[in-house]
Length: 452
View 1 (cartoon, rainbow, N blue to C red):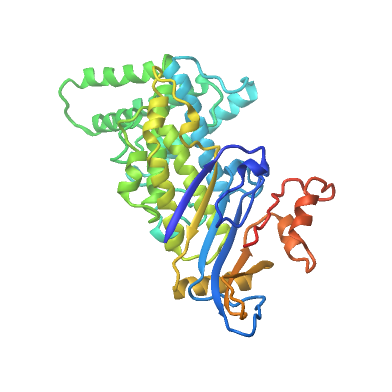
View 2 (view 1 turned 30 degrees about the vertical axis):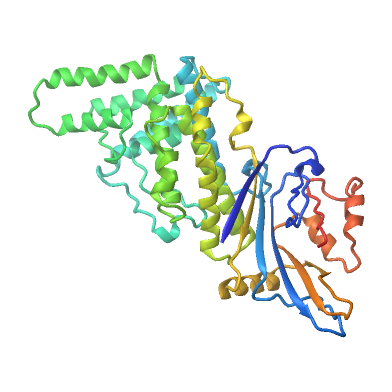
């Protein structure tokens, strides 16, 4: 099975964005704000001498080449976006903002602070610290999600430790003062030894290390230079509170999102560790990692589109799409790294970005019973479909071959569904009327099927 991935940036002109490949079934106006998934099959059948009966609708041949074509818009442009993925989008966006302020050494302010927000935020921090104090140390209070559940609605990772859970709360902060107050609350809990939270061993962020070291000091009966170590930890917390409140939370955010994507891709069996590791390389700069997070999110969005649009699609075909997109993005990582270097002036158009529209064609295996069963289920479950037939290599005796084309619409804009459901609908009429559709929702994409 082959997978072809393509990135499209021009969203203004339908003719310029159309796929010129002769095998393409669709021309697409990318000015729309909605993705599509279409299943397209092509096969030939012998025509015996003396007759040229065309079977419509045709019965697909086992040798039919089926292509599943997807156009995936960024999730933020989708009207029915996945809420868990939108939450992941918001976390990456906040981390990206923090990274820029942190690396520039500037004060971070999101929106104008208000007394009401300050009081509400402080209350939430206090409640979080109190709940962590009362929780049993060394227990997450939640188990690990089973592998089968990982991608079911993109379940939230259940083994978040104290530092990660704190990050999910403070990402709603509005300025450095909110962040400083959060660190101060943690410092107070550690100093009184009331706060003894769970920190995962794999969490090597600076905040996690300080908390872990403070807990070790609290447990140790004797410790060489205990006072000096206590002063060092207190000094680090004071530096974060007074001067660098972004520092600990940038690092915790990077750790959390690396763990989240590993959870989805490797834990969900979407990809191998070897495929994912280049995107989660801890040796990379924060901005380079954030750029990688955006690409991984786009891959998850394509997976989500397939699951929503084509329920029952054999998992290995969807995973093959994920692998192809990861390979496509991995080839561009060097360009991304160069662009993050201030001494390089890299043209951003040479590498993929989150806002790109992703067009993917999945060529399903021929002579596959599994594919035939899948296509039959799609044909039964989705209506309408578009059939075309054309004679190829006919002789003067009426013999030759017919080539069939069958398009099954799965997740498509309503305009296309309504058009193809009409018995007397003409494709050229749809195309001509596309500029004057006052009674139709203008978010719909207009498709034009190319006759063989």
